[in-house]
Image (cartoon, rainbow, N blue to C red; front, side, top):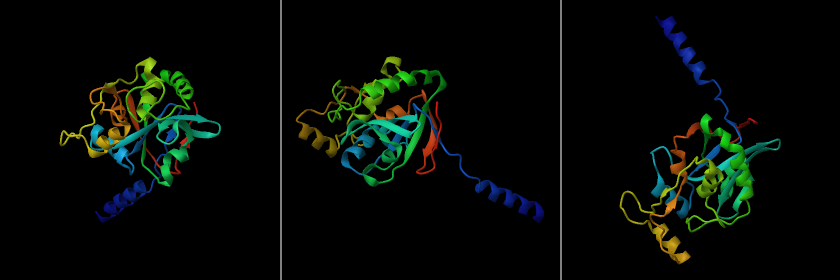
Length: 217
């Protein structure tokens, strides 16, 4: 009996020591970034969270070429831009958790044209109003517009209210006071948590810093 128990223990230890499969990032993958410090980032997650395990406040689109992995995204400081994966993983020199999602097979044919549209939108400023615009984009709006002709993602009425209290968080009140406009409650929009919940995406896994493999198309 002890002999069999010992064998089972050894097998268990061996299984635990097996190296984790590295994620192979593909062109068209969506990289969802966890909430980072900052009132606006936390406010986005606070009012858009769809499940206990998702706390995303940012999303980018992966592009793989011979030089490595790049991420096209819209962010407050640079606007719509193309950055290295390393820079995306280390905003403000901090490491963040990034989860890779991929379009399901039926929708992957939309990737090439979506990537082309995303590249055409580079260089525009960040859309701090979160009201849909042709001249500026926020992160999930940037992704939505890239895939819009193929109807991959849908818009929904935006809410800026805390689901627990039904009130606007102070961060949003201050944000729109500075902009000098009303909070656009109920207007059409999109957000990272909502996109991650799409049935047209499949979750690939957590992208671990320094452990990424590249898979080219």
